[in-house]
Length: 184
Ligand SMILES: CC(C)(COP(=O)(O)OP(=O)(O)OC[C@H]1O[C@@H](n2cnc3c(N)ncnc32)[C@H](O)[C@@H]1OP(=O)(O)O)[C@@H](O)C(=O)NCCC(=O)NCCS
Image 1 (cartoon, rainbow, N blue to C red):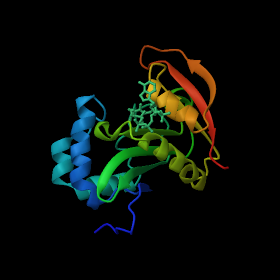
Image 2: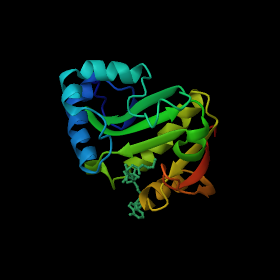
Image 3: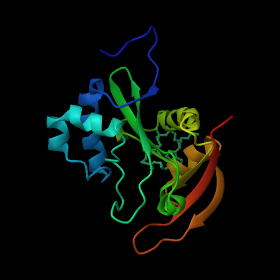
Image 4: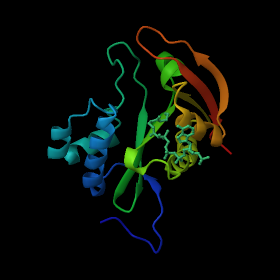
């Protein structure tokens, strides 16, 4: 069971079985907006332990833009949780490859749709900075779609400094690129 202290607060945690029901509900919400639609829901539900073990082993299950032509980089995946609720997901890449330099960045994150607009996006990114620093990322690149006003707001509010905007290519959309100091 998840430890319930006197006051429950959100925290970043490794994926764990405690969050199964909540994660599966969140997955349905994400898929309604075409996020994580490459995750097999039936398989994930049937073998949630295997799913969680693969995430914790750095299996890059949720990050697979083009494994055949990209240099793999180590990635740590954390969930923002509160009690037994899954609130959001955070990917931290320990270093960049050429694709991440232009499009993916060191970190990306998402709050499940039903928990948005309550400050958890900012909470997640604030907690992500020391977590990234502990993994050796002193300065993190974050990228965001130019039309993603909420994402831009969260990144700028957490100290993101705008660098530039990459052009769209045939395969990838334009991105605004920001740097954030993780060591403060
Ligand atoms: C971006 C995202 C993480 C924000 O999560 P959230 O929990 O709603 O964020 P918060 O509640 O902490 O705050 C969002 C801030 O953006 C503002 N905001 C929300 N929607 C907005 C919009 N359409 N236009 C402008 N600002 C907006 C909010 O008012 C809030 O600012 P405030 O606290 O100063 O009022 C969430 O929308 C999401 O998961 N999107 C899909 C994935 C994604 O875009 N990730 C970010 C890029 S990696």
